[in-house]
Length: 158
Image 1 (cartoon, rainbow, N blue to C red):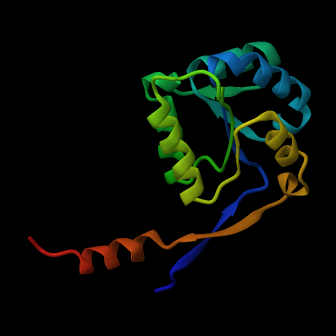
Image 2: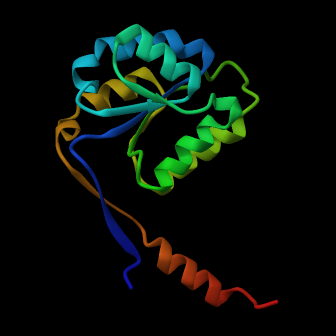
């Protein structure tokens, strides 16, 4: 079995939009400024952020739970399921959040699955204006099934 498998991010991206409270207005403005591009993709986000973006932009945004109530973990689970392949997360580095471990877990799972993850406006601008936004993108990730089998074989049976 191969160590890596190739996954495809489709032409129509599944984009998660997330923002800490102090960055929601900045993300909403960014979504307005990029609405012509965003409307060609499927959008989702954590609770309050999704609702605020949908209300301010008329972009359809599927909402999950609020971040502190498990929304970040829901987004992470959708990444694992292959149902989210792009994350825009305007995080606030100057304000402590009670769900920081959830945010770190979300960032980690995006890294494991090798999906684009913007944590600020500059990165989001570079990503959304990339020529790759309009085409399929193949990327190699760990062959999870092989990894599980290998780990199961090397762990002691106790």
